[in-house]
Image (cartoon, rainbow, N blue to C red; front, side):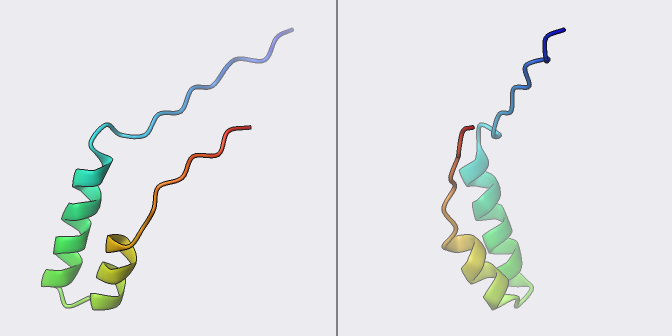
Amino acid sequence: MSTPVRIFELPKHLDHYIAAFSMLYARQGELQLQEIVANAHIRVHEG
């Protein structure tokens, strides 16, 4: 019996979502969360 292959994909416009969260947190005064999101790096590790 073979194991089904699972394919994972990141959203195509992930940078737009991150920018939207950053602006939302800034408007709400959540500066620490805004700083975390604004300085985030996306990494993908295979295996």
